[in-house]
Length: 349
Ligand code: FMN
Image (cartoon, rainbow, N blue to C red; front, side, top):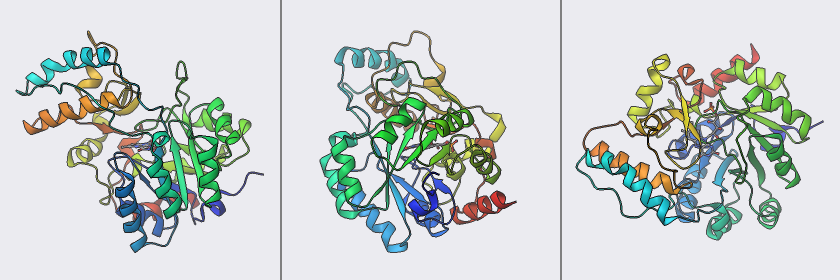
């Protein structure tokens, strides 16, 4: 018997609103957690001090558990020649908007592996749960978080990653299938990504680990949650399903593309951030001819964000980044609390 997910997370429903850097907000977390699911806030570009303030804001409006999500990628090393070649490749794209590319690029997302202030802030504020994406911190950091009474989750995209998650003492594994929107959190140093779909991954992990498995990727409704649970998951983590909630900070353009539904298909590219991620294709997804090697994560993102800013200033959204999972045409526009209620009802039916 695996430990019980709802007991571990102290939630009423086996549903996690996925952390989504740039899209999840304190309001989304508050409404989701108050409705009995687990709201999650991604650190993204925030500093430890900014996160302390956001956690404080959440706590003024809920006493329910919530989760804080940190990126655990290998801090970028930088490669000046590779970055220069990338900027030269993007130069005509900038010039089309009378803009010049930046002269250097920097890492946009600081890794939790290299952020002692973030660790100190988490140990002090003690959110009920913390989730790791793109790998794991050191055993010492995991021990400190566990000793502070924090429940730990980590993404895994293969049985090997899930084994590492369990061996590290993490409480819950999030099985991130290839259908998932955004980055699935593939660990560093993995060779070719086996791109395992959510259902196959849940079945594989059910054989591999004894900790609770949370299915993520392409799950948009209670029927999807029920199917994943039938296969051995203890619950589901859903991102794209929450993008249209009024409490998210998704842009109007992102919302419009999602609402246009079946007009679009999602694709996966590394050309935006330096790592594979799924979204509604922009020009960086599509223009592959003559493309040099993409700078490493998250240095490439710096260039993508600068290019989008230049284009958007000229009223052009062709470089906007709109992450979404394969199930996005099923997204519903409703407040997060109503969405949680609808998911719970569908799960019961
Ligand atoms: N996962 C993280 O662990 N941290 C993030 O910051 C993060 N950002 C995301 C941003 C967006 C817009 C989306 C759609 C997903 C993001 N993810 C992130 C992935 C989610 O954790 C989750 O795996 C995914 O949303 C599940 O697939 P679904 O979108 O089909 O529900």
